Length: 171
Image (cartoon, rainbow, N blue to C red; front, side, top):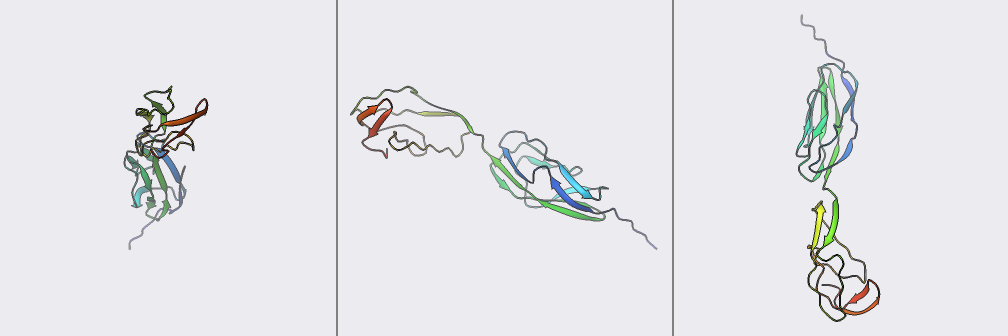
């Protein structure tokens, strides 16, 4: 006769943040696992999906840690189990780019002359650089597509300090 005694199965698995947002290239605070039900001989594993690149699952504690290295959203399912059974938890983990810290131009204090073209005024961004978008307000100078370059229009007249119109607002 063989007698098998199983552990009490884990009933639920949760994380400090089941839907977490992280910043690329910045170490994350450990996302701790919490189990209800059985607590003996627990092991954690990735049941399906994948973790964001650079993050790891601790097989003994279930904690997620690391430094994310790629942008995007991952939807892994983590399983905690022992000889009595298992519990799963689906997660949504998003890795965002760093926010831009500053935006400056070659000439931050530019003066322009009516009916004279201007030379390119190149943008410099510090901080995050992925997926930048610049949207000037109506009546403001136009930016080059994808480059953030202020360029190529001539002024017809001024209405006051900082107000001007462009002959070609699409440039």
